[in-house]
Image (cartoon, rainbow, N blue to C red; front, side, top):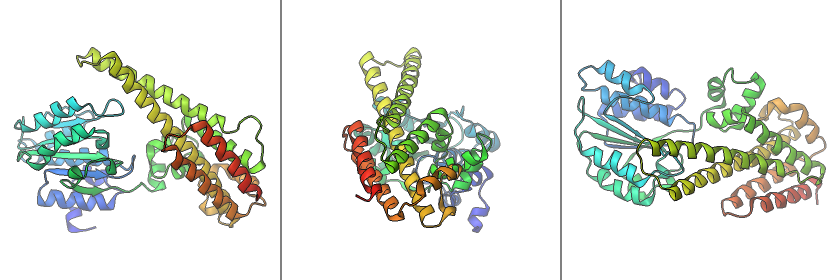
Length: 375
């Protein structure tokens, strides 16, 4: 650990415990004095939000009349600190007017306390181009007391003019051990360990895998893989994945509708058409994410079959399904298992092109069955 890192405040050190690159970058920023714009980039669940809150708390504490009290309030979620503005989309996208009012126009007002204000935009990739273009002037000519932190899991969706004006802070997927620590006690130890490894470093995805929906996704993915391995087509074995994804999407749509209705009751003007369109966007996005996760689990199953076929059981992700995996791996050429993984990944890419999900999964099943039979 460098001398600069050793001087890091505890909240920042704890928030970046599993992110060494981000820890070094934030330590240097606090030592030299924070810049006016940062882009925290990295996969969902990698700790960007916690790191942003801890970093913002330190920025606001410096120069405050009571640094400890300023830091304490900034670290609360939600935070009552008047100089910390945290903007998260209520649906699939940030509302243009909310970015204008809460960030662009608010950034010109001097701090209520201390000498700085911090504006955090969560899921920055969800800003429409209109919002990003409007934000550009604030990034180019920020007031001396304003600091912006953009959080993004998909920075390629941001305009280059936005990203080029921000200092990058890189976050990597969390190691499985870190995810396992986060989820300790939320399920049987073997299942928690498997969920942590299957989630690819995303604690929220791992938590989903431990939920009823997640368990059904795993069961659907395994049923599809097992049926393709045995060539059993009866009963449309891809159907459970679709049904579960639809259920996840419907639940998300209901939750988004309730959230927007609460905002409307609180005084925000939301038309009936806007509410319907936004809730449908949220539902579609969550359904697609769930289906992609299900296919990812299917690919992981074939990957595990290949690992067992290559006599590498230590590489298995779904350790809580070892008996079933060993039965499916019996007599299977590892090369066939790797080919199956590629077929699943190809289908995941095709779904990005808005092809029919049901037809894509049906076609995948027959391609898998042929590949695994050696045809």
